[in-house]
Image 1 (cartoon, rainbow, N blue to C red):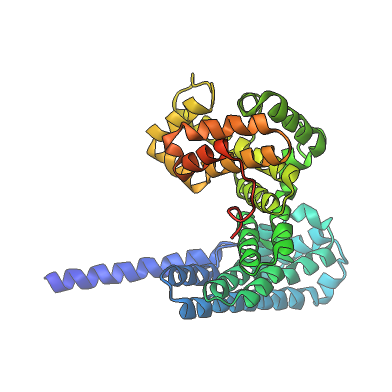
Image 2: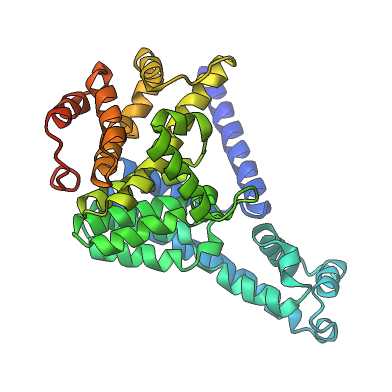
Length: 381
């Protein structure tokens, strides 16, 4: 009896799996190559880079093969005399494929419209065919191949792979992966001491930063905003800066702080000050917003009280550690000092020297108060 139940259960499980597979294959955008990619990611996370690489390459081939087949189905249908007579009118061709039950060709257009906004083709069949050709490319798989090279120490191959993938930015389904890839490239360039390339990769991450570039709907030019923030910092101090300015840019925070550290190491104190100022505003905004989310009446009153809130909360403490919050404050003070604003620098060093939760930056700030040293060796490896 027990054996019969097990067989019945196994049969039902198999039937459900097969039905799920049919449903999966019938929905545009849900394709087997995504499963292959995810299988490779599991292998990658386990450190099985050889098999992960094979899976990522399989995912790339599977996507290319699927779109090759779909393109053939579409072209075969478009070659029919009655379809050719419709010319370049995409809407007429699309309707004809469905009316005449040319299901494979219609499915190819469904896949295209799922991935690319139909309005972007201007009702041109030729434009749709060009876009369909580009869909063979699987940038996510290319990125994971590059990450596998990177994890294996093949930095040159990784950079080539990343660069090739980023040439097709419009095909990424997850734009966050573009930012992560630029950070990976910056890390490699830094490891190879190619600092100009590192700088270029980090700067490109900030191109979509509304406050930094001035591209946001409610901002004037980026220079105006930076100048206003800089004046506030230099004339009124960091606490006034944090009262007046809030900025949510999680994707760009790391780029700002790494550029700030780099420019400080390179002796470019004004540029370092700008980037570290932005990093501090972004990080402080994240902390303050989280505190307001928990207590709607929370009000920022100064760095000491904010630091006390961080010290009391494990989540905020973990964020401060991960985002190098107190390191940013320390080097912002160094940049201010190097840029001729010694009094503002001493305010930040004094804050750190009195805050036990600042870790190593407490002792280093105390040393700076006695004998300020704005050297580069402690900033970049």
